[in-house]
Length: 92
Image (tube, rainbow, N blue to C red; front, side, top):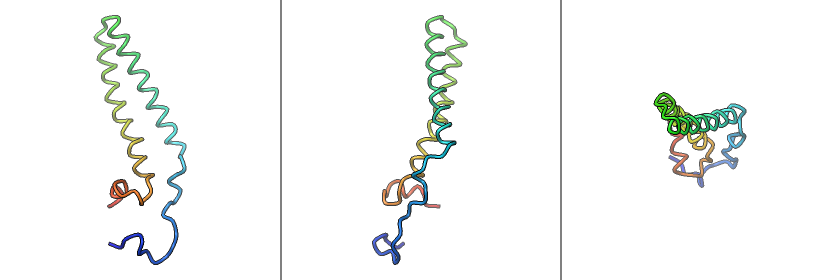
């Protein structure tokens, strides 16, 4: 493997990954809406003693967890290759 300092030609390795894409903004909005809905359902379930609302609120937590992985992975994808621990995630 060739180190970046020995690279024979000079150019950056940033190819637009610093640009936010429309789908990423919508995913973050859905993630926020899911968290808010989850909190409201759990709160209402506890306050009213409704097991159905509580169970659905906790189930929404699994959706929030799955949606929460997306921004994490997007952050890893957008990291520049100079950040070693994130650049390793790009190895195929």
